[in-house]
Image (cartoon, rainbow, N blue to C red; front, side, top):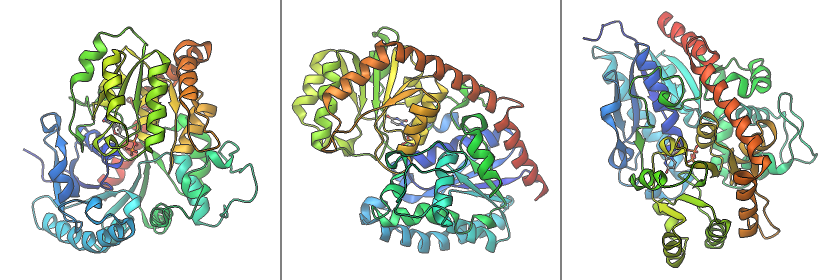
Length: 458
Ligand code: UDP
């Protein structure tokens, strides 16, 4: 039976795949350290999520509140600005009711861990006089750049290049997050990422899904302005320290899983397959999808390509048929990415450089071909290529397209060349450092314990 004095944490992610995964992983880690965690997400997400509940600890539960769009989430409204403002108005009232519900039960809330993309959660938390911990799901360098913009330390639009910020490499425009290199693009998202810093000074704890050695210089620089605890990587423990029982997967997916990939990979030689996935949100034009398909086919290598349903419409059916009849490629809707990345057959990861995917590849020692699109992805790609030296970034032509020839050449470089061997050596090094950080006594493990000590004192 749970002890009455077990600390109870509410975990409140932004409701999208790339934000749910790291918070769920962190919740599992807290559970093994004796904390009760309730993960809160939206009613809409509860309707579409596939949850591997059998592998979740009993001290971790889910609860759901309405964001005002129970039938379709963001897609129901289609306009991000309306969605975000309604989510704040309706979500904050519902969150108050939920906290009241727990506070009048046997398990009152001690702390709320929230995603700063929904920074209003901290204001609700403070109304109840609870401990509030911000959890940045993106890497420290990105947060630090946004911090500079928010505080007017980096003026937009950028007029002088390269950009020099203490702790970061010199940056060209193409290396910066899309909200920095094109601030007028998606104004509602721009406001959301910058507003992360509007009340951060009121947070009792600031957690970042990264690990110290991965970004030591920027962690040191940012820590002078805002005390942060790096607690990552939030990659399932099975692939790292093995310290969390049954923690083999991300456990929650918003797409229907396809299990055919693992059998297919079994028949492929070690290091021969390019794994291709652009995450849960990127949608390429039909022209770009065609170039990607023809580049993959033309490379002569094996490839496994995740095309979620929303992207399906942008690839001609004949090309998908050509891929399956080639014997070289397999197209799937959604897979267990960790299981695939850890498969011996995988030789490289052609990725949009979403932060979770990038961290997962680093943790599993897989070199990358980066095709960043927006938000934090360009800065992640810069680090992949020039700081961690575990991949290459594709070159975009004058029409904004990455051609089939460029894709073929990148695949060959990473799979076949000496350049690729060096990347593999570097990737292995980062994997070892990730394991060290999260293992008992590592920097992230110590920071998680610091967080727990603050919780115990609350
Ligand atoms: N993912 C997965 N199966 C897939 C493709 C992606 O489980 O077929 C997971 C991946 O492991 C990662 C997340 O989805 O944890 C994507 O997050 P990321 O930050 O890379 O990209 P986003 O979807 O936010 O753009």
